[in-house]
Image 1 (cartoon, rainbow, N blue to C red):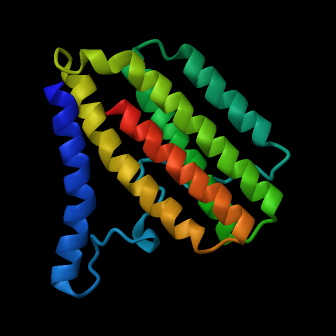
Image 2 (cartoon, one colour):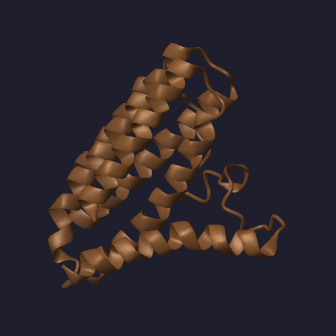
Length: 184
């Protein structure tokens, strides 16, 4: 219970603390948390070359499934699922930036939502062990930071799409926050 409270307070502190610090400085810095500065590397993933609009995207998903199949450690599996969700978010970001059609962007949103569901399921399996396993605790701390970045990217994407796609992204953000709250 104490661990849940600590993680929740850390998440809230990160979200609101960054805004206060940036407001006090008055200028943008290299550590600013705006979307323009959030890259694939900030999320710990590479820049995607194969996007959901590619006919070869199924191979990427097949590779992810194979990696998941051979990952036996529950903590490593949760890390892998979080990495996949981050990759899917960066793919969505690239689709929006490339101004792809609405159906393709919605497919990217659905992929991301499925990724977040998988992260939640994996974290639910390991979070009880957070007090006895330091790997779980450090992963949950990293997860808080990653999910904050995810929210910032989704918020920025909302301003770059049509009204109906905006609603889908807003729904994804709400679902993301709901799942994140359930994890904590």
